[in-house]
Image 1 (cartoon, rainbow, N blue to C red):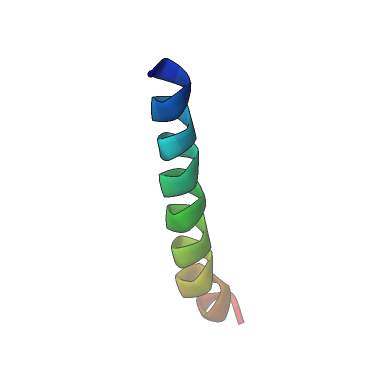
Image 2: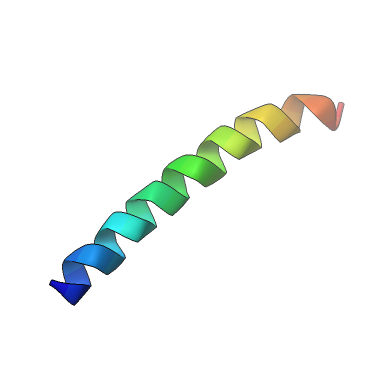
Length: 29
């Protein structure tokens, strides 16, 4: 159960980082 929760958090974190990066990257240039 705990490992499943950690895996879910890693997926959500990866999605959030990828979306945030797609917004921040064009603003840098």
